[in-house]
Image 1 (cartoon, one colour):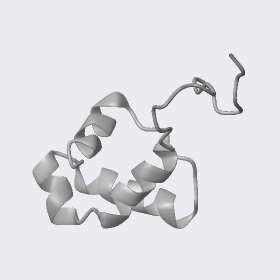
Image 2: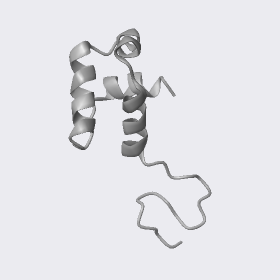
Image 3: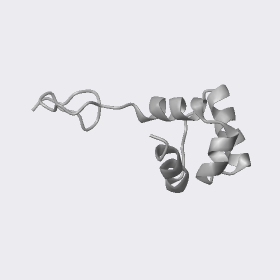
Length: 73
């Protein structure tokens, strides 16, 4: 099998590759403070995430926060 430039994706693989950084950024952009608090994300973390989006800093989240954000999907 030929390897593609995307780690874990092969030429014959039919599974669609998802850019998780892009998907997380979309989720955070749509996130409101009220929804974040309902999910158990603190006010401080909410503004921290929004600031990372504003300055285009790569997102490196802990598993606990990541799970809460992916629960929206």
